[in-house]
Amino acid sequence: AQTVTQSQPEMSVQEAETVTLSCTYDTSESDYYLFWYKQPPSRQMILVIRQEAYKQQNATENRFSVNFQKAAKSFSLKISDSQLGDAAMYFCAYRRKSWGKLQFGAGTQVVVTP
Amino acid sequence: KAGVTQTPRYLIKTRGQQVTLSCSPISGHRSVSWYQQTPGQGLQFLFEYFSETQRNKGNFPGRFSGRQFSNSRSEMNVSTLELGDSALYLCASSLVGTGTYNSPLHFGNGTRLTVT
Image (cartoon, rainbow over all chains, first blue to last red; front, side, top):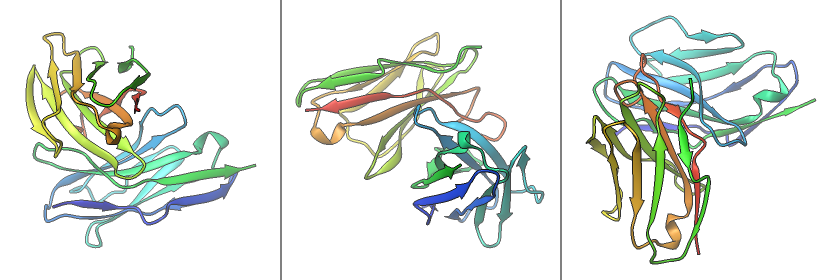
């Protein structure tokens, strides 16, 4: 069975600074997808960034980037130049390539201080 | 393009009652998935529908059921409500599969169900 672990319940960062959220997962699959979703107080889950396992290059979306270490089964998210609007719960999610469900980690609450 | 719409946003029910939640996917999306979110269990997959057929089901009792209509709108039903069913129920749609790279999930704002 696949599991997704986010070991940081909460992370605090000052505006304009950088914060890194960790995520590890367990799988026996060789090809799969990884995602980071953001859930602000509005409750809507918003896709932040996605990665295909077979792609070596780390995904980047504006101020958001990932460090994908396939051998270590690690998928961390880096938020650069943090903004107040980045404050939210962040979820790491895994999905095997063949048809299946999305599995989420427990989430990391990001607090941004002025 | 309108996003995923879930109705109602809030619902209060009594133990033993049943409830129906509604989800309208993004136009053109054929897959609808449902997730339950609670503080204790986190986000758990309920089921996925594609072209009116249930394709995948999570580990929930038979009291939880769903269906999808020809216009891709989906409903989720919970019968004989229990206190533990209190949760945020999230619906998500995607073009084809359940959150693939090229067809990621787009979520609605959820329905907050409180069972008293």
